[in-house]
Length: 81
Image (cartoon, rainbow, N blue to C red; front, side, top):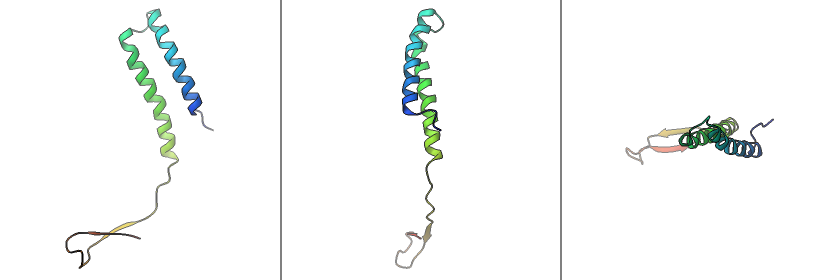
């Protein structure tokens, strides 16, 4: 089950973007701090999608062997097996 789908993240961005000016108006947050809070929320929401993507990426199982051949001289020749 995906909790942070693109639609949910878009909704959360909207809620945060609407809530921060209200917090500034109410005096809970300084106006100059609002941009940092927006950047932090975007980074945290983006981190969740990056972790999900990394967990679902398959690592290739091919093996790369470096061999020294007489025709290549001192330059390594990469052979994929």
